[in-house]
Amino acid sequence: MSAPQFGRRRHQHWYEAGPKAPDLFTPPSVPVNTSEAAAEAVKSSAPSIREAIFTLIREAGDRGMTAGELEAVGYPGSTARPRLRELQGNASWAKGRLPARIVKTTAQRGGMRVYIAL
Image 1 (cartoon, rainbow, N blue to C red):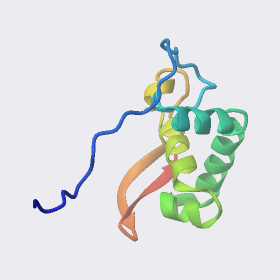
Image 2: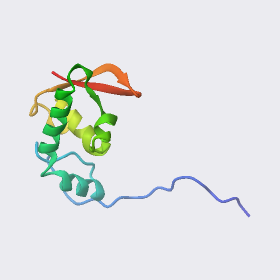
Image 3: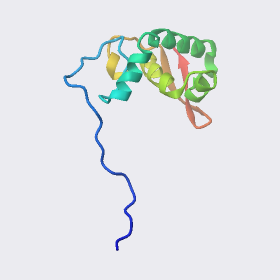
Image 4: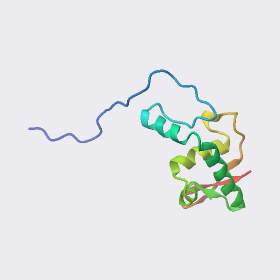
């Protein structure tokens, strides 16, 4: 009798047929149905969330804000982090279409990098 095997088993995700071209108003996702459903759910609110996060960082002045602080005021990490990349102007899904409006500094608070407005 052999010992039970523990660990991850390979599994497959369901993929929709056909490639999708990213655009500025389509939030990022990986080609897995749950990720794409989440991206679609935030699609209409992503621009206003991006502006709200920018406003919070700008109003924080030189102190800036971390992703954890954004989470503490009500923006979950999975929502805030993509908006931070967009605001830095380095999001792969928005390259060249969104200007850099914030910068990730070398300063840290609570082990997280601080973002300040340009």
